[in-house]
Image (cartoon, rainbow, N blue to C red; front, side, top):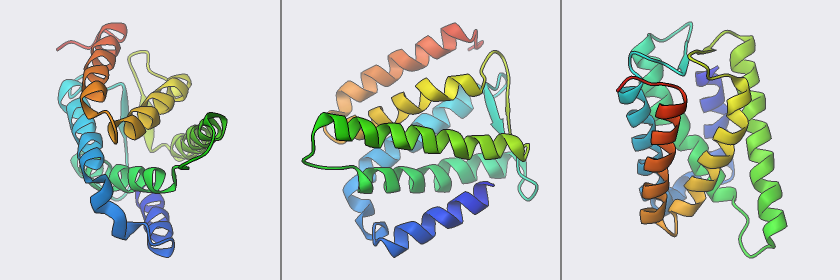
Length: 165
């Protein structure tokens, strides 16, 4: 699934010519990668979610998702974000991305390419994706605020899910 989703993302990014704008979003893409690497380090022995692939090893799928899939997904989200529209349209855009991400996650579940553990479940994806996409967009304009909010959010998740760090 990860490879399939990545190929689809690449096709869309090339077709819509969004790939050439990666420099505009470089700092935010690095932020997204850093957040994911932090999750891998903090939850190494206490996964809340874990991806599987029939083609890649555990480490390969982790790195593939962190360094390829998620940055491409983030680039598409940021490139399509509506500018100069009312807040309700931005909320609708965000909601569509959250629902779309959950549908894709549902396919990962169906094909047994993701597992949840330690109290995390599919139900957590709704608030998680809202926070993820909101922080991604906010990072473009207020990175220091997003760093602080990210630390608070991470600490909250560590506490709620009893992650031993």
